[in-house]
Amino acid sequence: MTPRAADAGDAAAIAEIWNAIIRDTLVTFNPIEKSRTEVEALIAARIGAAGGTFVAEIGGRVAGFASYAQFRGGAGYARTMEHTILLAPEARGQGFGRGLMAAVMEDARAKGVHSLFAGVSGANPEGRAFHCALGFQEVAVLREVGWKWGRWHDLHLMQKRL
Image 1 (cartoon, rainbow, N blue to C red):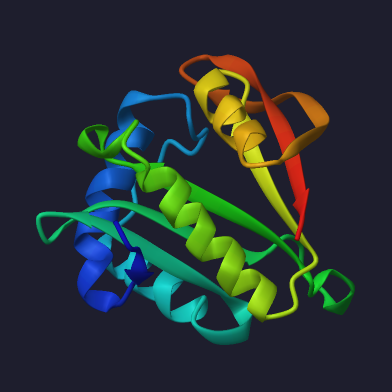
Image 2: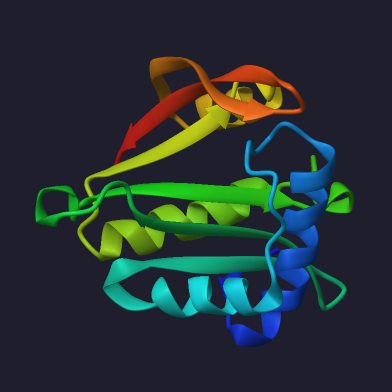
């Protein structure tokens, strides 16, 4: 499985994966689904030095994506990025996540990125274990900062220096 750079034609498939996770899980605290147009804009905004978006496919169909962009605004954070990685159920446990993260880290290193962050829901222990296996370290737990499904949730910040 070799990830490739995403393009506007991937937006609907990415939105489909993302929206299922928004609706059905606590992986993200955002309760608002993404439109194809919003995902197209995200892909366009992250092309070049501002970050990147990559997809993995099963049988020619997008089965997961990873995207990264600047962690916080301002020139002082220009070499610190935050990423999102989401997989369709059929892609989990098959190396697609590792492949996507390898593409993100390679691209980020080539652009001079020093540090990569993951914000992982406290309700997602699999996500934390995945990031630990890739060499990320938990650097902070932000208590009760995410609100979804009528209750508060913690956010674990994990960092890897590239």
